[in-house]
Length: 334
Image (cartoon, rainbow, N blue to C red; front, side, top):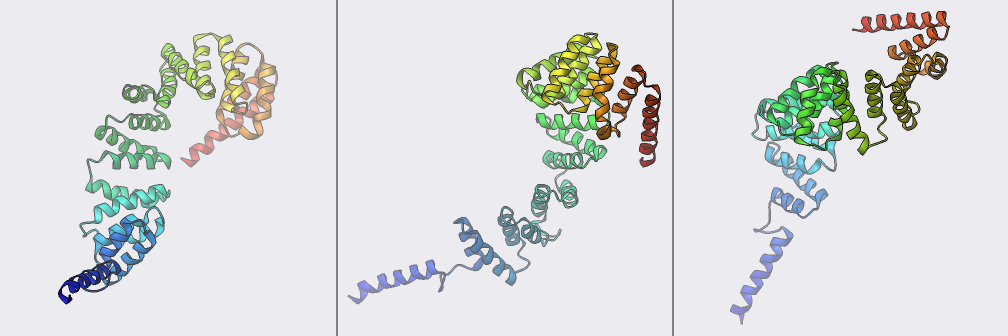
């Protein structure tokens, strides 16, 4: 009887020891942390990781695991852990990737830039890193730097339509719209239904004097998003440049129905009215907008023309002087 009971007793005590983490079969803290994390008990896992790292602070693999575990629940604490991993550690490139990710999501631009630049040294052929840097510089209005990284990104991941779109938008912000055509066309080749690429192409074709193609792209967009007042404005300008002022005025008024306070649309409307010699109406449309938009050269230019053509010549000269002052201030800032 003793011989038959003893093995069962031993088995039972072994199981208890395993599941309660005591005795000779107990898991160490790191193993416990991993098991508990796998079971979804994050808070308990974090405590076990920290206890393990108190005893073994140079276990950088464990610290990386902890940083990854913390990312969705406590980004600041995750950064603290990841930044403890030195560049001499094998885990450093992975840590830098996670630091870049946390910083980018958290809009910590300086930290994200530093981490991504370091990561680019480890992964010089990683298109995702190049794209992340291009997007960061674009978002922070550093367009010349964004262009460098966007060009690298399209070289490394030429099959991604939105990367080509980003390149075109950077060129637009650098006042180089004539160079937008090829990136936008490439984006559409890759994704024929990419709306933003078609919308930008309507503008780029107009700038390049390719009016038929600009109109085609505008109609493609408006069939899908008829409330897009920016595209409708470009359609109005295309019709104006072709000499169809009645159709252009109709389109710009449809745009203003969607965006009645949009000053760019109002300027186009006023300029079309001036072409029709309806200077008083153009002046009456623009003058109430002066307190808000007196810092815009395009608005002041249109208002100056309306004032002059409606007989308000001294007022017109005042607006022209304001334009000169704006140019001088902008030049001094540069």
